Image (cartoon, rainbow, N blue to C red; front, side, top):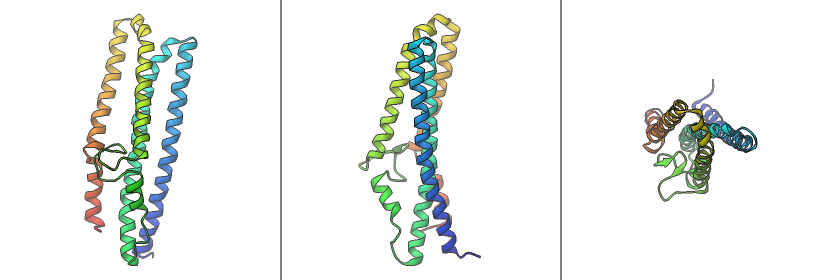
Amino acid sequence: MMDATSLAAAQLRRMRGMNRYYHERFFADVRFVTVGVTALFVIGWWSVPLAFLLIPPLTLIGAAQTAFDASSLIFSRHYAERLERYLNQQVESTVLIAHELENEYLFPLSSRKIVTAALDGSFSWFGFMTLFYTALGVLAFGFGLALGWPHLIDAGTAWVVAYLASLGTSGIVALVVGWWWFVAGVGERRLSKILDERLPI
């Protein structure tokens, strides 16, 4: 049977594997949305202008999906940090410092942030890229809606109401829940509560 230190080290390897998977998944999702949005712009300008109206929901899905990816990173980083502190304590040496580097260089845990963009003095390139991708998504959303709007109007009032109601409801719900989970810190507090009870370091 493995001792507690070996089990913690195995769990740390697992959490670091999750970190790697987050980055792979995040950029795969960004590429998918980028290719999809570009293709819809081309199709819209080429011959099917209603394709422009698919861009706003695609960018909304992309934003929610990449935030979901980030929630996995935040989960694995919280647990990895606690495991590194535990292992340092067991070997009586601060040999494991990846969590300290991540908090300084990428983004800090347990702070107010828009997904991974810190809202305090610890803003970083990681945070900038989060906001950069978000801004591009907002622009694509706006241009897609503007370019498709005349064709949506032509489809009739019922389609306008249905489209805007669906898009608006989805967007508002995503923003409200995202604010509650990330900015208000509900998700990270849930992690901290369990870690403080089970692995207090």
